[in-house]
Length: 115
Length: 114
Image (cartoon, rainbow over all chains, first blue to last red; front, side, top):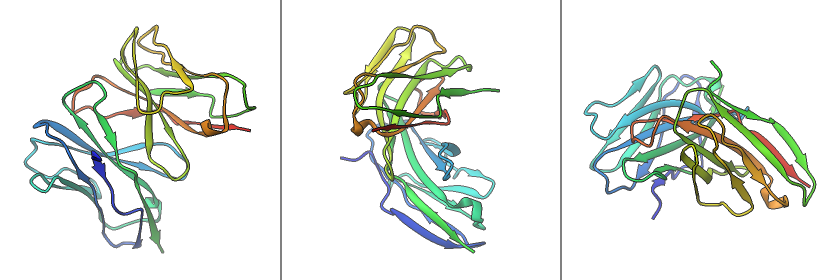
């Protein structure tokens, strides 16, 4: 079974609107971390936001927030007030506590912001 | 603050040639990783290391070798390059394997094998 599932290969959003990028995960660990990375066309991987499994509040970083629903095992990224510079690939990742090879990436969602 | 440094940024190889992708981090991180990213796809783990002298295979290790003689350096060796190894290669590091630790990525190496 896939550890991280991103079901939206591509998304479009109007500039200044909000957009939600979906991510579901699968783990039997009680302690784990969830991460979102942005990959613009230049290719680098930029860390956006982190959510710990024991964090009771949803993480926020500026215009980014993580909608964490533990029971549903989802960790959706919400980008508010989209900007043209938000056009990029977005990867969801999970890091389990157990094992050395414990980091899993989704297949990514390509977001395009329309002016 | 350098972080994770990869060299070269671009490289073209002929089939059968060999090369080493360099990766250095200056954050004293124990864990280091090599990923490849094929066009339009996600990241696949090639090899990882949990400390100097310790390496292990990831999901797609065939055709590659690694070594970790120091904490800072984690080079990736391609032997007998094949067109299937055309990809973007990312090196990454983290302090340890804890679930709270994010990965720090290098800027990537774009490799074409022709």
